[in-house]
Image 1 (tube, rainbow, N blue to C red):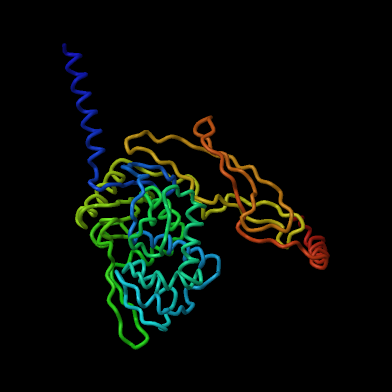
Image 2: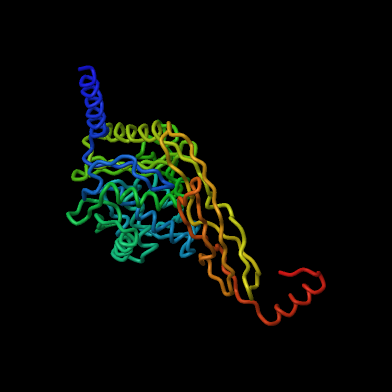
Length: 380
C-alpha cells in the first residue's frame, strides 16, 4: 500500500511538471535556445507559421551586417532617403526625402526605434530596391533552412504571405548575433537621431527589458493586429547566451512576462562551459609556395558544452590533425580536424579553417627568401 502511495505521488509530481512546462508562457508560440550549441531548451508551437511583425527586421539587419562585413558597404557611408522610404507609415523616425545619413545611424534607428522608414533605407542601400532586397531575404532564409518563413516586405507589416515561426526567428537571431556589432545598437535604451537641419529625434528602445532585466542586450520587438505582441530577446549571463522568441501574445505586458519566464527558466536550469573559443588559434599549418609559409587555424564557431546546473562536470580533451597547404590559399580553407573526447570516447569532430588569403610567391621573392634562409640558417 505504501509503495502504491509513493507511485501515485511521483506520478502527480511528473504530471505537474508537464503542466508547468506547457504553462510556462501564455503566447501562441515560443522558443528558448542557447546560442553556442543551438540547443532548444523550451518550445511551444515553435514551427507554427505566424505573422512576425517587426521581428522581420532582424533579417533586414542580418543582410546589412553581412554586407558590412563583406565590405560591400561601410558604416560610415552616406545613404539617401528615397521618396518611398520617407512615406512609410507605422513605427518610424520620420526620415525626409533626399536626407542623407550615415549607414550606422540608420541601423541604430531600426535596432532601437524599429523604424520602418529606416528599414527601407537599408534595403535600398544594400539591394538597390525593396523588391530585390526581399528576394535576397528569402534566398538567405533558404540558405538558413528556414522551413516556415516567407518574406514579402522588409519591415513586417501584415501580409497573408508574410510568415515565419518562433524557431526560424531564433535561427535568424542566432546568425545576427554572429555579428557582435549589432549588440552595440540593440543594447541602447535611448538615443537621438540627428537631422540635417540641426534638429534631432529622441529614440527610445521598443524592448523595455534592455533597461529592466539585467543582462538583456537585444534584440527585436514586434506588433501588428494580426501578429499580436512579439519579442525576440537575448542576453548573456557568464558564458550562457540565451535567445528567446515570443509570438502572438495578447498584451505588451504579457509578452515581457513570457520572455522573462523563458530567460529565468534557462538561467536557473542550465550552465555552459566553453571548450574552444573561435577567436583563439589552435595552431599553424605550413603553406608551400606561399608568400607566407604558415598560417593560423581556427574553428568557425565556439565549441561549448551545455549541461544542467546540477549535473556533474565531465572531463574533455582534444587532439588536432593539421594538413599541409599549397598556395594560393583562400580565407576559410579547410586546414585540419579537431577531435574532442569525452573520457576515452569521441564526443565530436570539428573542421579547422584558415582566416587569411595567401598568394603564391613569385620567383623573385622565392629567390630572395632562399638567400635569406641560407644566411640565417633557418628552414621555413
